[in-house]
Image (cartoon, rainbow over all chains, first blue to last red; front, side, top):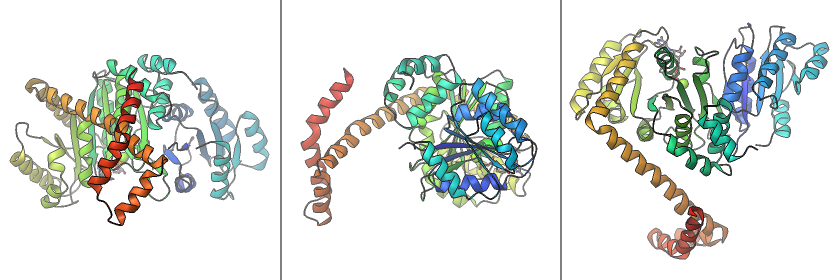
Length: 130
Length: 325
Ligand SMILES: Nc1nc2c(ncn2[C@@H]2O[C@H](COP(=O)(O)OP(=O)(O)O)[C@@H](O)[C@H]2O)c(=O)[nH]1
Ligand SMILES: [Mg+2]
């Protein structure tokens, strides 16, 4: 049986992955296979892991405020490896005014601090076939 | 969807993306996966495969990371297959081994793939054999397979690995438990990791005694390591390659190759004959009826099995002939 594979990654320097872990567990409980890569990943690391793991979904958790620089760099690295077609999600502390920019850069959905994990599960399931 | 040709050529050229795609195909048994495995098979048999098994948290992933670094230092390319359990409740999984495998940032010589067991007992995914073949055909010199230590069931890893490293830590149990867990039969090399922990010398000594007493031919070395700092990993690497030399110099290698070749054929026969028989019987509702009669004790399992083989044997033979054309 096919399973949805999701890479959950934390780029940049912030050292908190509680949110990422909560999301990872919720996705697992929804029947997905979650590849969790840990803290302080470079955009190159994330893109390379996404290719090797052949995931359909990449989710970044960013709390550092550096999303406007990190997100385009991850997307660029993904595209450079021919993996620009993944479903690309960003979560964490993202001010409302940055959402537009991130979406124009290629992010499919932004999930702020108040998001319920059900919404994330729902979003993935409605955009990727399992 | 890329064609079988493209995938096969990509894998043989060592292309990362093609290898990753091929693994997905095999894992999901997508259309064409058998053709991919058939076509790459002539290019396999070159890699050295090392299995690492042991209880969760003993440091397998950290060790794999260190071993890979070592192999890179010797100029070998590395493929890593990290298997974690599927949750029996949701069918999902968290595959977190990459967290401890971060030393290869930017090094295309290390390819890491995480797989979930997907309901397969034995600590390995059903796709493992195929995935190892794909990495082999893609030119990976050394393949490291990390498997869930689940007690007796890691025996599965012996089929695919040339050398099996059993990883333990001090304080997890006494020697009786080690014997019960069946790890003595599986291990070609024993590794007492977290040697910074109290009792590690004692655990290593116990293991050494046990290994000496039950080995025939090869006496499994016992190596103490501290994967986090890297201490002792060079000895572990030497021990693995000592075992390789032993296998190659004694004919045991040939024996292992033959054994795993046979197991490979057995798997396919089971898939082609057993699974097909049951699928056909299920599709025609024959299976349901038979199960009803079985549970009512109106027939017995031997009779039932013979009945199905009689009913579908020739049809399956024709299907197999169709495949072989
Ligand atoms: N004290 C100590 N901790 C270690 C050592 N090797 C690994 N660890 C830690 O043990 C934990 C589990 O390691 P991991 O490689 O994920 O274990 P696995 O579940 O067997 O793959 C991690 O926190 C590692 O940093 C060691 O030699 N000494
Ligand atoms: Mg691990």
